[in-house]
Length: 411
Length: 218
Ligand code: HEM
Ligand code: FES
Picture 1: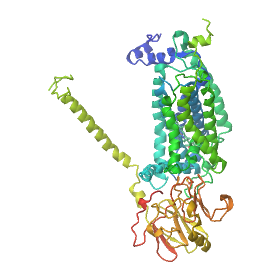
Picture 2: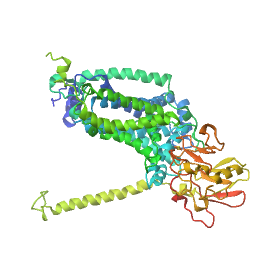
Picture 3: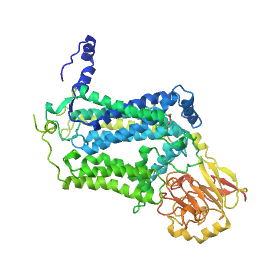
């Protein structure tokens, strides 16, 4: 660690007692980064940006929002109509959730393609999956807060998932609700947790970055850095690249916030919650559709009833991500050098898109068949393809170093 | 007793070099663990229904004199929708014939989704009056009442309930069909006839001790 070289006496005084400047210098400035990172490596910093935006807008929404079944819907309408810039803050928060998930999903598929979950980054990857789970819980509970029809019925369907637990299912659900249905106690606790969880995410993100900085970023070649010729300092090279990504990303985000603020949402959520009237169709937010499709696709399997089987498939799909580092037997990280996986990867992408498509439709006729095949394929991909590919695939020769690949062997 | 944190022979040691200090450390950790677990219990318990929520579950009386044959009304009990249907004579006859039995999950109402007095093909006290908790046993949506045979639910549809959320189907007694996501028949709440036209939901007939909380799946 280079000693801090600052002109400022104050900075040096502080750093001597609390080495925060040294820390930043070390982790952001000198931090050696592979020199061949592509734009697929921008999504991590974009996700961090989204988390900041969600926390900032959320705190200001919380100043105007009232968590009570009789007042919640009106308080959100008041935010939209009467609170200065309330519409803007809420539209940023609403669409921000969607963009947070887009960015995170791309970030995850990037990791899948380049084998970023493999040794020595297993814990880094697992922490990422923990973040994903927390994000899902946060977004689900946030969506309940405006207390529209989809809020209420979405909450009803998702909390009822837990009644599939053998023996204690009903008790667990009553406990979650604090009553005999989704009601005021439910709304209140969801609000408390919706406020808390983003800060839990913040903590896990800290660990995620700590794990990242232990071995550094993976890269498109998937090989380790062999020396200084393979890396460049994070700042200014990647700070500038990240900033450029932020510019492009925020432009697209702004187009949604200002011109299509309700495109990604469900109009039924602008109808006040009615516990006596299930809407003709309950669809979760788009980012949950693939999981929702699995939930409803699975038929009875032997003695396991469809309900429990569906719930197991849904949670199992995330569990696959947790154990992926041990399912993938190939020692080669990057798909660039895996002639078969390179193509097979896209099957998973297509499969998840199909699941998302199925999740948006009533489970009738062809959708049922498609949902079942796609669910089956998802697990086949993880449990069968990943282990077998590593054994039977013949990887291409790896370049000797990052530098060698970039300079094509010329010094 | 040693006054320095040195393992080994200084503390009163046992057979394999364990010391009294090791024992104390383990015992203290165990007690702290148990204590923490006990301390979290009130927190967890506070999330269960509060006393006022529980008290709001008193029985209600429903006047069914205005319910026409073939009609359904919905009332709230314990913040749950209760379906009350007056079945037509044809519907009662169709149920008695029990043609769908082979395609139902639980045609004999074996699962504990109702009291003994509702354990028959009609799943009701009187064949023409059906009382159900209107909550799909899959994930809690309110099923649609589709009494007309046929239609978009297929030629074999004899009338019953269709859940819009994930497509579960129930017959006109609230018995669930096979190969739909819902695992159980719709629950029948405790109820009895106070008079010919008034039913009381939330209370058993005098001769029954059926416990609503013992229901398999609400
Ligand atoms: C991980 C970060 C977060 C995510 C993914 C998230 C997601 C959401 C979602 C999807 C909604 C529903 C929006 C709608 O349809 O109206 C919502 C509402 C809300 N959120 Fe968040 N949120 C996050 C962080 C926060 C934080 C940190 C706070 C408070 C400090 C907060 C406070 C609120 C409030 C008060 C509402 C209700 C107002 C409304 O519905 O617009 N959120 N959140
Ligand atoms: S809640 Fe009725 S089918 Fe899922």
